[in-house]
Image (cartoon, rainbow, N blue to C red):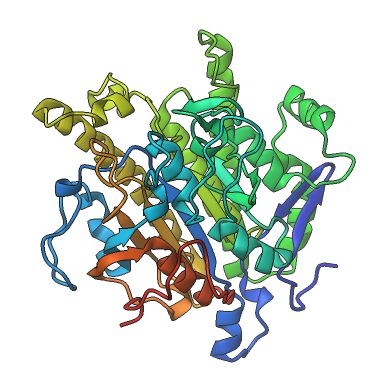
Length: 449
């Protein structure tokens, strides 16, 4: 199957229980192909990153509009990507509000974030929400990839029981919803994500097979070595270099997971931290971001969601001098010390997200980079965590959407502009035009001009 002829985009390196998808290579695009053909070989990816508990908005929102705005303290980590960034102010999730249901803003914030729907208040099994934008995209374009979508997270959360003033835990712990009654809980264990991305999916790819590989301390790359050498022999020097760089990155991710597992054996057992999850939260975030990059690079999926922490999270941040729980600090009531600590948390999250954006921008993809061929959103379903507001939300958009987005600006939108208007515009650019999503009132303009 391997020769100097044109390679199909769906080329895998295969071994026992292993299927390693390849990044886009020059040999996957016919020689002398027209520019449009080259661009079409690099599809559009959609990514949705979510942070809980709101933001210290005075430290987030730029004072000026347009291209000449000054980066605020919280946004500063993204300044190297000014030309790839849209800061969007004025968007609202009205269905995150109580609307007669009383307390429960955190559950409503996460549940409505990608759906635009007011969730039914229940702690039982009769949960009801809406289909999320990522799943609308996955249902339309997911047949083109190995996985219609992936859902990632960094903090375990229950899917049953009462987690917020009478709202089911399913609402607080999931932003992706496959149907009105079915959330897609995020996977938080890097090992399980790694095995899913690189497992063959056949009978040999099972827990016993994975345990055998681990027992003999073999990398997945050892199982595809013969196929790799055969493939490389038929490729040009540029493609051989691309494959070598890619497989080196895969092995580096695998080593980080192995190190986390080794540390877990010696650590004091933690109830919510399975083996494979790094002890350091920042390491965990970056590892999950790297897995998402690999998934996009190899085109095994084009749709991803990532909850940096569950809504209402009381995650602590000792490495940055914040030993208190995040959620508790957001109810600062104007206490300057607490406001400063929440600001540090907000900056920390943006630093990790900036790492992800840098990785996307560093990887060639067709006639550009992965970031050029993506639309990545970042934000929260709560603006002011102290008052639980759901208007003028913190929203960022990065990437050029295969030329369909014009970044490099701060734009303000009027009144109660629904966040779902932005999601409809993103779906349009992904080739998934739908009439409505949740409480949408039209398409968000100003993405291209």
